[in-house]
Length: 172
Image: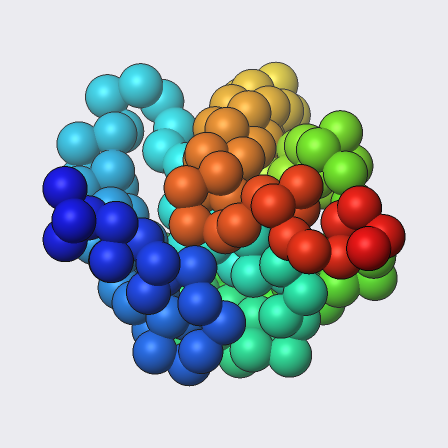
């Protein structure tokens, strides 16, 4: 139990090592999710959820290059066209950085929007257009939005310190 608490304390820290550890955990969870999760029609993009959590914790600057690298790795894991996911995740990280530390409802809205955008555009192949008809793309986007929002909120609760535990929350 003590080892788990010390690992969680390390992951909550704002150091570069903590960001790398969080990235490796999200990547380690993404590989089995992508491998076995296609049974349910769509899988959550845990790397995108991790990037959103980085932005929500105020680390927008490391989130943008992390989104690019995470997108390249996500394309390698899922077999997509290289660079497409990294472009989408970088745009999502940059766009989510404009929203200043949203509350839980704002985080859910940003997560839904990011998941829908990534879900819709991952059904698009840069050389051939959309892979499916409009209804299937919309279904994929909605599933992706719901899965990514749930993953982002869960990762935010596990990895990142809740705002009410910070000293500056009460204004003291």
